[in-house]
Length: 357
Length: 182
Image 1 (cartoon, chains in turn brown, blue):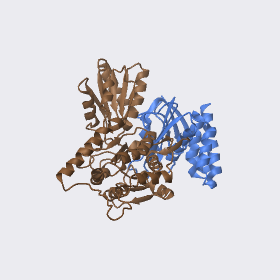
Image 2: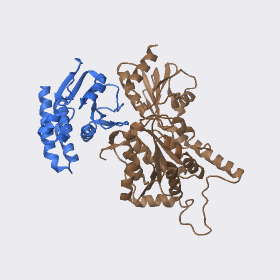
Image 3: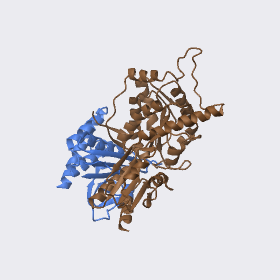
Image 4: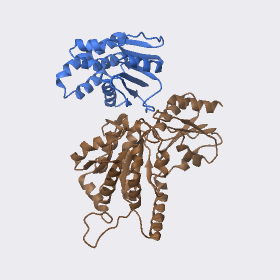
C-alpha cells in the first residue's frame, strides 16, 4: 500500500468513508473544520450524504436518525461543540444506536481557545451526556492511528449497537503526516452491513412488523432491565483494551500519557534512554475502558514515581492513573493547557528532577 | 537523524506552501518520516504565519518543538519572534530583501538570500517561496533535490503559466544555497 501525505482531519474523514460511512452531519468549529469540508466533497463521490446542519444539536440528531435507519453515520466537532451534542449522544446510547463521532479537542472550559488541548478527558471517558452510559473511547497519538481507529470504530459501533468516540486533539487534527489508508469497503459489503442490522432498524418493515427504537421507557422495570443489559455490555469491553507499553520493564520512572502528549513523551523517553536514564511509558489507546492492568506491569520495587503528562490544567487523566497505580509509588505531573502544546523539554526536565531527587 | 524546521513570514508569502512542499517531498522519500504542523491562530492580515516541518529517519515524537535546528524567516517580525528559539549551532535562512536587522547571535550559521528581489527579477514576486525552498535544500541537502523538484512540479501541475518561472526560481535558489555551503 502506498503512503499518502494527509492532514489528520482529512485522514479521519477518508478512513470513515472507507469503513462504509455514508452519512455525515456536522457544524463548523475550529480546529475540526477540515472533517466536514472533506466529507462535503467526498460523500457525493461515493453516493453518501453530507449535511451541514443548522447547529450541533441538529447535526447529532440527524446522525441519530441515519443510525436508526442502519446507515453507518458520523459527526464531529471540537470541545464546546461536543458539549452541545451531548443530548443526542446520550439519546444514541439510550436507544442503542451505533454511530461514530470525533472530538478534535481544543482549550476550555467555555469557548476556551481554538488551539490544541486535552481538557475533555473526564467528559469523554466518564460522562459524555446524561444517564451514566458508557462508550468505547479511543485516543490516537498519530495520524495513522487516528485512521486505523476510526476505521475500526464503525465495526465496534455496529457490534455493540453503541456510540464510539475518537478523542483526538488539535495537533492530530491539523498536522499532516504520511499514512497508509485502509481498503475501501465495497458497495456490496456496505449493503450487507446495513442488511445485517435489519432486525432492529427502522427501515422497510411491513405494517404490524414495527420495530421500537426508544431512548427511554415508561416502565421503571424496563428501564432498569435496559441499564443492566448495558452494564453487561460495558463489562464485556475488557477484551477490547488497547495500550502501548514502552521500556517499562526496568524503569525507575514511568510516564503515563495519552494522545499527542504521549507521542511527545515517547520521544523524551528515547532521549533519556540514550543518556542511560531508565524511563518508560504507558500509553492507553482505549481511554474508556481504561487499561488499569497495564500499570501492574511496573516493577514498583525499582520505580521511583509515575509521571502524568497531559495538556490539561487541572490534570484529569491523572485520576485514572491514580486508580491504576494504587498508591504503589508517588505520582507527579507535567502539565500545560490553554492551547499550549506539550513541550518535550519540559518533560525532560520533569523526569530529571524526579530521577535526581 | 532528525531535522526540525520552522518557516515563518507574512501571510501571503507562501510559507505554508514552502513547508508543505518540503514535507510532501519527504513523504515521497520512503526512508523518512515527516510531520507538517501549521500554526493557525487568530492571525491577522500582515501578521506572522508559520509552520513546522520535522524530517527524521526515526519515529517522530514532537511535531512542534520549543527549540528548532533550522529556521527560515521571510520578514522582520518572524526574526524577532523565532530567533531566540533557534538552537545553538542552528541554521538561519533569511530573506535579506526584507529583513535588514543584523542578527545578534554568533552561535548560529546565517544564510542570506534576497529572495523577494530575486523573485521580481524572474518576473513574479510569487515565486519567492520556491526560491527559498531551493536555498534551503541546496544548503542542507536534507532531501534529494530532484525529489523535491518533482514534487513541486507535480503540485504546480495546473499552474502551467508559472511552472518555468518556478523551475528557474528553484534552480537559482539551489545554486545560492550550494554556494553558501561551499
